[in-house]
Image 1 (cartoon, one colour):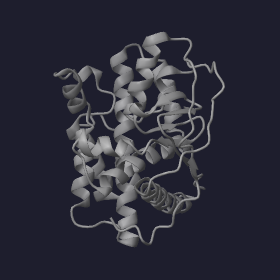
Image 2 (cartoon, rainbow, N blue to C red):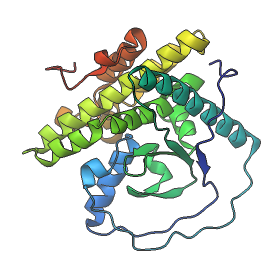
Image 3 (cartoon, rainbow, N blue to C red):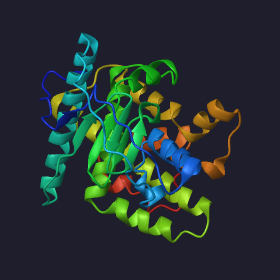
Length: 286
């Protein structure tokens, strides 16, 4: 990627080196599992928990640890990618007569406290709607490269752009509508299907960012798109389930299959059209 022309976002909250301890009430082990699954796949946990988390301990902090040069480089990378999304979405919202409210990106290590509850690094990056913040432990990028076999800087940028896509959905009122529909769903499959549409739309919105930024500032290099599409495929529900349990249960999908995620990310990149990202208006997202 070419990020030299992208200004670093000032909306970075660095909590690395701080330790957080808190308990989870109201759901026991089942609630913890739901939180980890939701966070790992990048969905706002409040859509699933609907307020089941309660704070029981005050976060405990220590002085931030000195960061390695590689981590500092990654912080700069993340800040530039976030800045690029801010620049792009501000223009898109302005063209529609709206103001883009920029999210904050929180860097953390090991554990973090958000308005959506307590999270551990193993849960992966996530967006929390109530506080409008994206959370990421930079160690996730090692997992993306090694565990999920999705190397490359554009693959890393896609992760941030997907979470920012959830922020866009939040600003547009889409997340609250989905939450309302899920609360009225009569079956788990119905609720999961809504989650899949939400996640695929975030993939498409990530593609729109990449398309706009590349058209205006030529940020993409040869092979970048393939890196992003590979990352989208590697975190498809079918591949995630296959790795975790050795078999696939389509009824349990919450984010979409590898094929679907690639399809919608590609749709955003190729069309750069918000209307093409309306996963809820289509009878099928396949």
